[in-house]
Length: 242
Image (tube, rainbow, N blue to C red; front, side, top):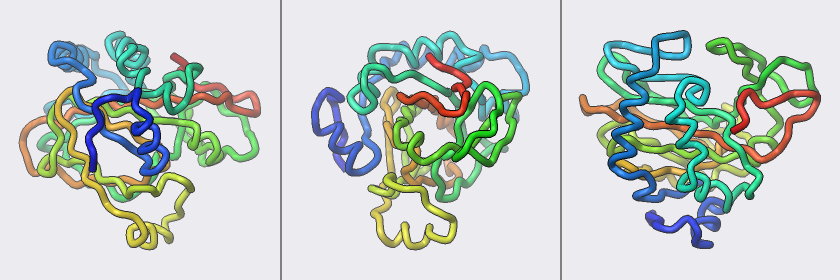
């Protein structure tokens, strides 16, 4: 799989359109990586923070961390998003993941199919309502998800031994039901997305992806940012719009 060094290249857009993802190296500098690691550690304990010895998961990161809001709005990150979603795109959610001893999970094949909104309003096409860490979640129509892009900023090297993300290349054009997953795995190539520290994996939320537990005791820290470009119907509003 090619590693892309210039998001301004039409090859970047073509790869996102064709494969559902692309990897770009050297997006965040070493000093920025250190600052972001420190910023994550400084987030106080709360319902959004999941901790077992170390922090391994944080929901609603853009609400909690000024440094992560700055990252989401930075020119370097937006340069990865605007070629795909356009200049009017905005960040709607941030999440932090790590895989550490005691919190080391297996992620089965799935699509990211839930968004965060300010309030619940029953609206055609929106279903599977829930509340997580005080924020309303809902599964939107597939058209909303097709107009989104996720940017995964890697704060550590991510490789085959530490729970790297695997993606079914080209699986991002539809919503897949659970009983269709075996067909999808047979139809699409599985790509192991190794990303170095400071690099980014840009991916469509509908791309089928999975990961295995880490075989390494070291960190595998990732800041996962989601961007959208469309308004929601039925009076619904994005929980965050940055």
